[in-house]
Length: 342
Ligand code: FKS
Ligand code: ZN
Image (cartoon, rainbow, N blue to C red; front, side):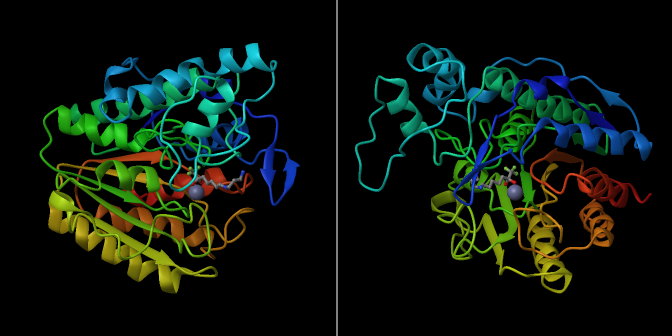
């Protein structure tokens, strides 16, 4: 399987993250992509290729230009206002507040961010753009005939919506890829999100549309981030009614709960008959993941890949979360090996 990867992910590197009320070393860090790339090499998965550059046009097919403009200029505004350390919001916009974009950097951070744990650093914009290029290059490779491609994106993307960012995500790589597949001529696309956290950004981007099915297996939003989206009764609206499938699972869920949910997601996607499948690949469902509470063992990851392959659709794997740094690479690559039947 082809892997698309860029070193530019390294440009996004936060100094600290607010975890359980304390400033700690970030779990979403450059070493994540390094360890996944190492596993790709040791498993001899196949060629590793640099992405092409696509510019902002395919990004603007999914994201509001105000968010894109903000992400591009946030760092310089922040440095001018405060200094050359990570830009974090002090407040966030809440229910019923005025939805007008403030002028100052602190106001803008509060306007576009959903939470304070996703710092903007000097290279965040360049890294986020390069992750979108990694995803878009994967779509191009599938168009050229590949059956499966791994886009080793970092930073991740599935919590970023049309006009907000958060949850370690700035641009929604999977949604940008899905929209690009449609723009290149696909009639129907499916996004399968197997990250531990609900892909609220992806869901919201496609919620009113019937050309993209979004199916997600994730921690129950009553218990875990992102808390305010991901309930089973969110089934889509308008044209999109019936095209969104949420399969929330309780803390402590293992393969016995996960497997039937995965089968239900795959059955829904099969019914959609997509021309392309995008998998938001998170392996933070792992039993030893430091921020998550599912109980999948390492031996389950090839089975996830194998089940996805049963759809027989050109498939783009877009990297999302996974924080058990020692096993992260192996678990991610095992999904891909299971897909390949290796
Ligand atoms: C801690 C804030 C709250 C957020 C959890 C984010 C999970 C991110 C992810 C992604 F795939 F996007 F990376 N925790 N500062 O794993 O879903
Ligand atoms: Zn996650």
